[in-house]
Image (tube, rainbow, N blue to C red; front, side, top):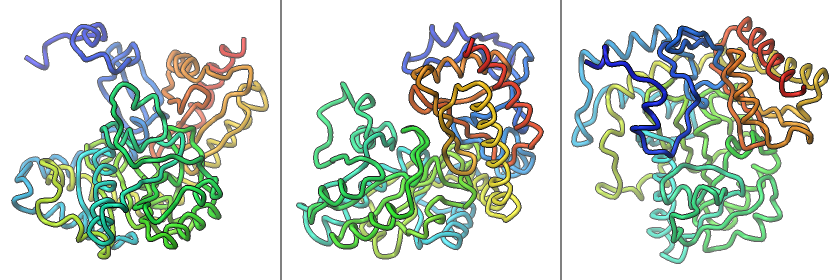
Length: 404
């Protein structure tokens, strides 16, 4: 029945909880960096499922490993472990600062786990007074009650109160503000090395180094949320590797599964024991299907060929965006790292990022926004350069309509 039943975009408004407002087309097929909708119209995808489809759509190796694992084992629960989870954990530990891994299903769950770990670690090692968490204004860490409270965008937590106590926010990239706020009561400082939803804003290396020093001085853990910036997105496996600043806890999701729901929290032997048996869990976390896919994603991405290719594609994409900015005046600046790029709308077009998304879709191009003033691009890490050039042409047509 599911194959023959006809559905349309109107069914969303009739059937679904109205917390989303999807665009007016339904994609039904994808290949590489292209999508096709119900009417057979083709789109170039620079949205990447919001930085999730790290290897594009229907990558043949991911289809192969998913199909192979589907014939073997889907779910066994965490009463048992499984081979794909252990292989993936081993490779993540080998590739990063981490000694230990916890698998969950989403970025919000990974961050929830990180914040709970930080509080439990401080509770067990210092005492209950050391429970405060400092995050950054404009940050985004997920949609659970804990993660929206830590996230620095009040619009996501309004109406769900009372908020979780012991959380404060300071401006991003402002070390003086953090120095004034941090204390012996601080159990963790959490930040994105490259803010995504907040406008695609990179942290400076000097800032990250100073944050690490303040955490060490006050006995606080440093948590890097790399849900959006990780898994090759910036041209290194994780964004922290650009600065050489090592966190105590790191969260990864989105691109790690290439489109399959899986996430991970990485940490050290010093911190991990705080989550002792029974203290935390996830029914589907570490399931064989997700781990098998993520292992192959990691094998493909963590290579010089793919990571160096991200830098090359960054140059092509940002050069093209700057050329459009010079020609049409719509963008005031281009920022970001690797293939997480933000084009900031010039004063005259502030607040119209959503309009750019709509106009781009009309031209057969999918882009994102990061707030109302920034057009965000997060394509496949292996998008063909020809697709980038064609996408820039389609974006030009959309921007010309905006500038009329």
